[in-house]
Length: 140
Image 1 (cartoon, rainbow, N blue to C red):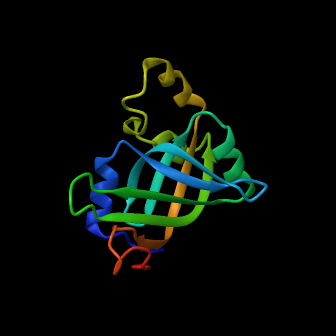
Image 2 (cartoon, rainbow, N blue to C red):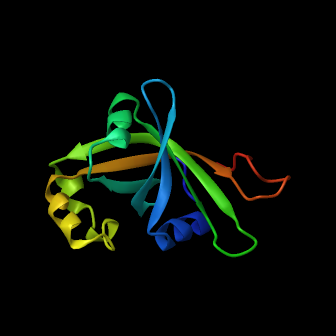
């Protein structure tokens, strides 16, 4: 497991939703916004409410990538990659904090009961800061 730096953890906690990329059965990328939370410095968790393309992709190929960035200059940015484990109807799913879906309209509250918890174990971290000497550099 790779440990995320404090700045990355803070960014993930600050953002409500981040883009999460998965791989489709035909190799095409899929990106969807996910409401994430940091479980610990090496683990990111989100709830799957819809069980559509992202969920299907993760069931076939359990890897994902997400990115997050600062909203003001100097725009430090990160890409996180890792393997995922999907939980349904267990203690991991039950413990998924309601903050993951906070901000969604009230009708989404009913989906929490049947949702899945996606647990991403961080395996790689890349600097995505927009400057030539940093962008794309693996930092962990």
